Length: 207
Image (cartoon, rainbow, N blue to C red; front, side):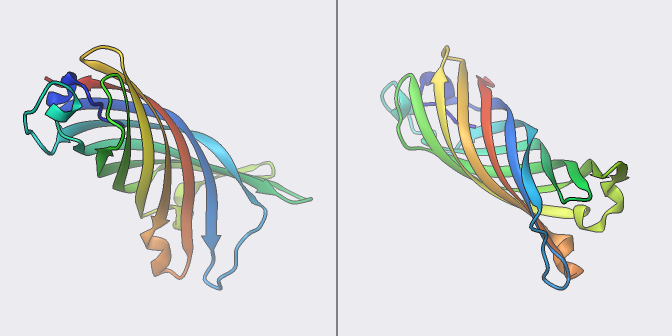
């Protein structure tokens, strides 16, 4: 979520993002084998968070009066989906992960009405619910060990924000992340979600 270069960002902010995940499953079993017929699929994501400026230096009116760098923390809900199959069966995975994320954002093209930023963050996620369909049967992913436990999720992104008013801005961005299972490594398996998401959101001055 982008923190904009305008007077309304002199304080802390609340932001909400939503959009589309495009996810690819990368799974290796204990023998190092993988499946070549698992394809990427789309799913939704939601993020609600809080931003705090890291520099409160007061300069001339405009972006320079406020911090170019922000600390952010947020709660996230991500759908990591995939599909696949062969001549005999069709496969479908729909998984939903809840998580906590922290990171920093830095403005690279400050302007009074439109600005851009880069951001990096690190999160922890765990399975909330999920289903796997094989042919005509459906299975609960909570019974599937490699989907459970704690996942670590680094992320990098680029954002653009447009000021609607001095208190409200609209954002759009593209982000790249990986969610890697810590539990999978411990049992000789490896599962990660390679994810690209396209975000749209709103940012509001908290005070």
